[in-house]
Image (cartoon, rainbow over all chains, first blue to last red):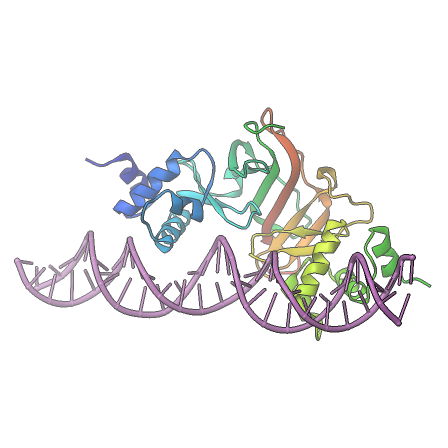
Length: 137
Length: 137
DNA sequence: AAGTTGATGCAACCGAGTTGCAAAGTTATT
DNA sequence: AATAACTTTGCAACTCGGTTGCATCAACTT
C-alpha cells in the first residue's frame, strides 16, 4: 500500500526515500514558501546538505519551485500537480515586509510582457512586496 | 565651475567626493546594470567596501536602483532624473541567459497587479529571463 | 589651529549556498 | 544469499557576496 506522498514522488520520477517523504510532508503543510534554513528547523536532526539536495531534486523534477524574493534566502513551495514551470504556469509571489512570509499568489498569473524585438522569453520572476492581510497596517 | 556629475550628486543630496564622481561616471557609461564585483574591476585600485558604501549611498538617495536578478549578485543601474523609485516608476528588468547581462527595460513599466483584499503594495521586482537581441538564438 | 564630522581603506566576519568524500542504504546480478 | 553497482545520506570544509568594526584621512566649523 503506497502512501500519497510516495505516489506524488513517483509521478515526478523521484525515488521515494523516507527522508524525501518527510520533506514533502513538511512542504505540504506550509501556507507560505519556506527557506532551507526554516526547513532545517522543522526537523530535530537532519543534515542541511541532505535537505538542500532533496530540495534540488524536487525542484529539478518540478515538484516544487523556488522563489528568490530578494531577502537573501531562496524560498521553496510546492507546484500544482499539472505545473511544468513554463512561463504560462507562473504566478506572482508576495513578500510581506512585516511578517517576512512569502506567499504564492497562485490565482494571479504573471502578466505577459511585450519584449523588445529579437528578445526571447524563457522565464519571469515577479515578486510583489507589501503588507499581507494577516498583518496590521 | 561645477561638473555635471557634481551637480547630479548634489541634486540627490550626496556630497560630491572624487570617488563618488568617478563611480557615477562609470555607472553612466554602462549599457547594462553592473554588479559590485564588476564595478571593482573597472578601477585599478579601489576598495570593495568603499564602492559598496558608495553604491549604498547612491541607492538610498535614489540616484541608482538595485536589481536582484537571481544570479546571486545584485546589479545596479542609474535611475532616471525624476525617479522616486515608487511602484509607478518601476520598469521591467531583463536577464540574458547567454551573455549574462542585465538590462533595464525602461520603456516597459511593471504591470499593475490586483492584489487580494487587505494586501497593500509597496514595491515590485520583475525580472524576465531569456535571450537578448545581441545574442544568437 | 583645534575640534567635529563624514569618507575611505584594511581586516576580518557572516551566512547562504555548495562540493568532496566516505559511510550507509538500496537495487540488481549471479 | 553473497557480491557488485549504484544511490542517498551525513559530516567537514570551502566559496563567494555582502557586511561590520575600527583606525586613518580629508573636509568643513568655530
